[in-house]
Image 1 (cartoon, helix red, strand yellow):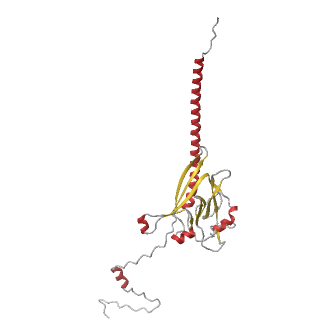
Image 2: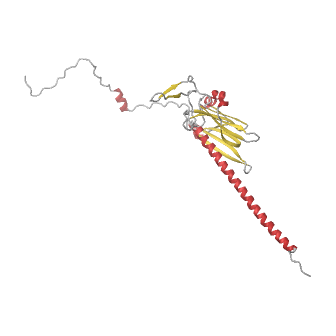
Image 3: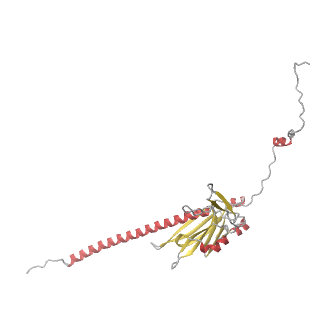
Length: 296
């Protein structure tokens, strides 16, 4: 009888086991590579988004200042003549700007942040004002529990005028996929006693009018933003913290310095009478000069 050639059951089990081990190792390597790629993409998107939002917020908040007129003068250039003439037109009467720095929060979430700043967006070959009001708003995203931070810019500094025309002002998306965003406004100590105690005031909301009544301040010294960004690649929140320093300062009125007593030399110079100047057009008195060696 002829013997049939083939694999035994043990050999078949060993072969299948080796193939399964190789397949599991290849799957784990592929899965680990996919996870690493998703993490890297999430980190890159996270860095790009936070770099963009930090750059824009730092420019606007650090350059915030307190203007005293609500309607700035606009420059109209007359190009009909060879030499360009600048015409200044006042659109409205001067008045104090309200809400130069204003922020509201609800349930530990920032709702609105606005201030007057000197860093405006400029387009190519376009004239833009040197000062403007910027408004940051947190808008809920559709079909999601995340938020989008938008930025609007208005050439008129009055907040009431912006409220009337905000629907016609273009809003730019600064960052999306925000899970949380809250603000803390910090005021540094001014008096010597507060500086010795190293105490500073913190607020979760800010109104320039109310703070001016309390602390004689219209703007804080620092603005701290705490939030988290939703990483859709790894389904995870990534926290962040920004601190912005406002360069323009508005301190309370300092007491007048006491006048120091004058030195004796200064008192002597003050008491000495100053020589009188000759009157123009008056009589000129002759001067008697001595004559030496001359005889009549």
